[in-house]
Image (cartoon, rainbow, N blue to C red; front, side):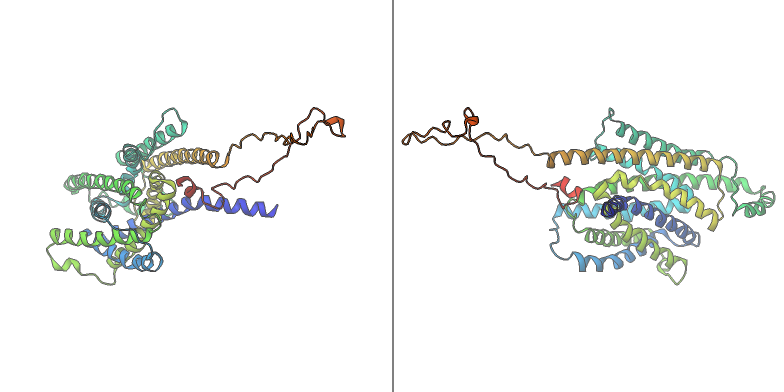
Length: 419
C-alpha cells in the first residue's frame, strides 16, 4: 500500500514538472521586466542591453554544454546552421530589441499584456506548419481555440479600457499622496499627453512585432529540437553566441557613441546579468525541454501569468496604478489560460491511450490442438486405450509461453511515442 502511494506521488511529480517549470519562468520574466524598465529609464541603450544580456547567457551556459554534451554532437550542416542562425535572429535580435523598445515607450504591465497574444500567434503558426491538428468536432480543439480567443480578449481589454483605479492595501497611501498633486500639473498635461500617446502607439507596434518574432521562435525551435533532442544545452549556447554576434552588429549600426558601451556596478549591470542568466540561458534551456515534451502551444500558454505577476510587482516597486480594466482583463486571461491547458491535457491523454493500445495490446494467434502421430506400421490405435472416457477425444499438448514484454516498459512515454 505504501509503495503504491509512493508510486502515485512520484508519477504526479513527474507529470507536474512542465507546469512548475513554466510557472517559475514567468516569475523570472516578471523580475526581468521590472529591472529592465528601471535600467531603461536611467538611460541605458536597449541595443547594448541585448548584447550584454546574451554575452552573460553564453558565458554561463556554454561550460555546462561542453562538459555534459560534448560527446556525439550533431553534425552541423548548412541547413542546420541556417536554422540556428534564424533562431538567433528571431530571439536575441528581433524579439529582444523590439520588446525593450516597446517597454521603454510603455510600461511593464502593458508590455506583458501585449505579449499575451503569444499563445494565439503560436497556435495559428503551429497549425499552419501542421504541428497542431485542428478538429472542430473535438471538444479539446474547441477549448484551445476558445481559450486562446478569451486570452487575447482579456489582453485587449487591459489595453483599451482602464476604468477607475483599484486601490490596493499596500498602494493606497501612495495613491492618496499623488491625488492632490495632479491639479498642479494639469495645465501642462495636454502637450505631454499628445507626445505620450504617440510613443504609446509606437511602443505598441514594437511589442506586436516582438511577439510575432517570439511565436516564430517557438515554432522553429520545436523543429530544431528534433536534431538537438539530446543536446539542448549546446543548442542554447549556439543560439546565445550567434545572437550576441548579431546584436553587436546591430548595435554598431544603430549606436555611434562609444559611451553607450560603458557599464558599471549599477542597475545596468544587474539588468544585463539577470536577463542573461535567468531569462536567456535558463529560460531557453527550460523552454526547450518543455517544448520537447508538451509542444510549443503548451509553453506559450503560461505567458498570461507573467502579466499578473508584473502588475503586482509593479505596484510595489514602480508604484504603478492598477485599473479596473486590468483586473477584469486578468480574470479573462486566467480563464483562457486554463481552457487552453485543459485542451492540451485532453489531447495528451488521448495520445497516451492510443500509444498504449498500439504497443501493449498484442493479439495472440489461436492455439490449435495437436493430434498424436499415428503409427501405421504397428497399427496403434490411440482411441483403444484403457480409459474409455477418452474414446472420441483427441490427445493434445497444451503449450504455454510467456507474453512478450511491452516495448514501452521502463521507457518514458514520450520516448515510446516517438519510437
